Length: 456
Image (tube, rainbow, N blue to C red; front, side, top):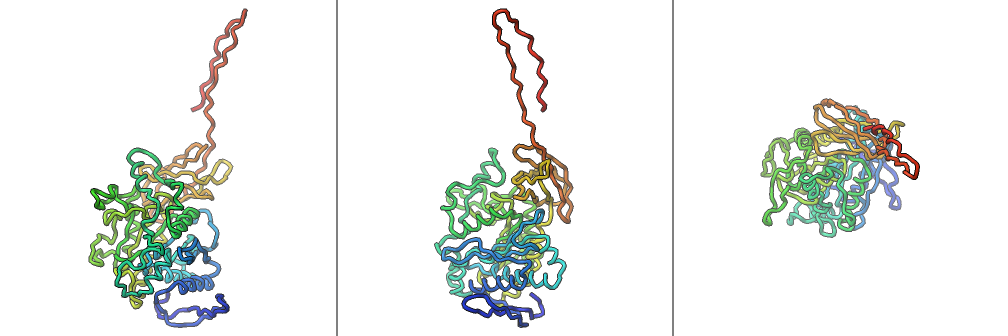
């Protein structure tokens, strides 16, 4: 959005329910709350204004049948380009926490407009990143909250989905398994889901899980309200309940320093989050480990980290869950730079291709970093992305049937270091069998032939 107070806007002229004609007018910028029809109209308006760098798609439907629409930005919409990372924003998971929804719609319009204006920073971002924006994960809850308006007397009205379920307590609990594995040994990434997981979750949760399993997302933020702080994993404390009480205890991931940096990038680029004092709470640097604030089980943030390659943080963006319309412009200006800077954070660490001797892609190869007990895997196209802070690392790529390859890599503060792996097929270790001649009448046993040692 331009700060001048004017922008090109689209007026939809409807014909028999279709989005027909878009007339461009110069009009004052309006910051207002968007009901479901407004949200859909905005997404298609942006797509019509930037058709070559956007795509609108649905990942599923809510309980009441509303589409969960995503707007994608890319120089090749609908296509994964190898070595181009995928990043996502999710808003309005709690229906009554509405600022994230409006910010993501504003961000969509801003990216389109700035790309068209030739803003080199935005052009570089769109051409080098595939960005997915889900403005509302809980459109049913939003409609309930919006019907009440900002003067909601019940603080939780509209928080849950239409079945009365809190979607941020609805993901399969993988923390219990990872804490066990860290203690006794076991996988440290891509923990499997229970066989019956689909029947255990709500339609909105199921749609998001299938979405994040079908794209190789690397970075994500989940936008909430009710506080002003950047919250990073783990959300569930190691001892979640002690004598019936939720235990609050700092519970870091193996990537704790990286998560703190990601949270600080948002906090310090934000207009006031970094100051720490907000909404009657104090968070140093405007960030917190989730479990040290309060322990939360079955949340989306921890699920992303434990089941996929995606590093997600949760952004609490406003004291009021449903801010008044006149506050929206200030909130947009306070968050705009942070929303862009966070997307740019996906371009750090190392990335590359995992290939065999014939340059065929090797998907699902495991990339391990010595000293960080959390691995990532290569995607369908054989490309991998490992977010890392500056430093020197020992990195190993492994794949079934291939010899592992280990390299030492120095990561700088700028663009990611390109590190390709060429894995050689393992030579089977054949154990030689001893041949004992038959000792029949008149025959003599020959001395055993010395067998060559199998190659190690």
